[in-house]
Image 1: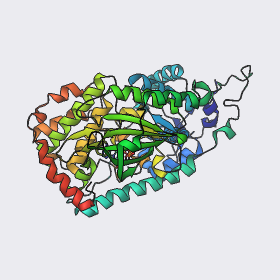
Image 2: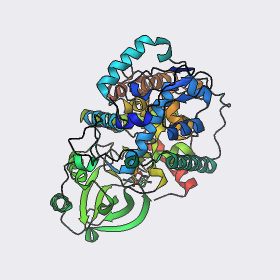
Image 3: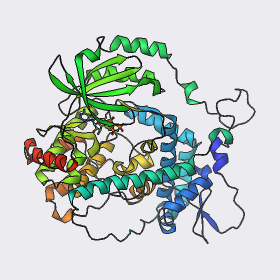
Length: 506
Ligand code: ATP
Ligand code: MG
């Protein structure tokens, strides 16, 4: 069988060329024919743009040490970029959705799951040595630097992200090859084609689309019918995300401040998904979630009214201040309550990180962005990847046994942010970070020795590469580390200090 991408990836293997084929630990399709050239140490059989990117960002030693992780990283990376380019609406994530997504990745990469599994089995039994590559040689880490002056640290983090974005942008240029020019038959081929290559339908054809008129009619029905301009007094803008802008407004009716997310539906390719989203969000209510309050439709703009968290994101606190262990425990407990609630409802957050934990000035801790996040097609640099990789569990990259527990791993990484001020590998480009997550697994925590045994054990339970061994939200809520939390009010001085430094008080 030759697949669309298989054709592109497969390189005929010249006899006796000094290369050895590598069996990969996971379901990488055999048709990749990825080989390591024994003389040059170079991975062969990958599309040239992929190789170029791998060579630019991973040393030969790293590729050699863990070729499986290198392939997984570039595969996931390439998929993420493609997905972003297609423009998606981040809906509530369920185990079912993840399964579909994994199938989509395989489709994109021209893989046949069943064959891959059986061939991988074959490969793993016949090439046992090659399947378990040694861990990469770890780079010598410089001694833990003392935390930098606050202002500097924040700029530093932003700068790192900017550099990362620039690297991504550069990578995009390399990776954006025109699919249709390589496979003009995609979506256009007649059904009675002679070729045995599977013809992939274009996404828009597969999706049973509602017409825009139908979507708007339904939205009008479920949104609040009144005029939002009469009810809300718009004030300060909080920022702009992928989906539009968020601003503060005063609800005159209830005499309270709210946050309003303004989504421009004309820029949203999959408007129908928003309907489901609003329906579900209306049902969701938890003290540790940034709750949805109402929705209004004004022409083609959707206003999502949410609770306002006036203390800003946890990121500001972790980058600017040093948190005490008992404060970290308090935040973990609140976030875990939200995760547990979502998991009980069958929802996986998939993007737990300090940026998505918002604080109230009184120390309230609430999780946001668990849905209702429209990623609109655009050329903003930060949109080039589906999620930031730094908080990703290894099984997200390798897509094995992928489910609810990804949120627990991310919580562990967020706990590291609260200890160190940033997640592991933040200074690395996203592709390198993906590789390191897949190759190294559990990251090291520089300040490990200074942590209490309870905290060390809590991190141990979160950061298990083996999903079976990783704790569930429910188990962690009973962990001894959370038995000794400081009051949430103790976070207020930290929030104030961070806001002062960043000149961000609302
Ligand atoms: P993404 O599009 O990936 O979600 P983002 O979180 O930066 O990116 P938005 O969700 O649009 O973008 O949020 C924009 C800004 O508004 C962020 O700084 C966010 O912290 C802030 N914000 C969002 N919701 C609230 C809220 N309910 N209360 C206070 N601030 C909020
Ligand atoms: Mg957001």
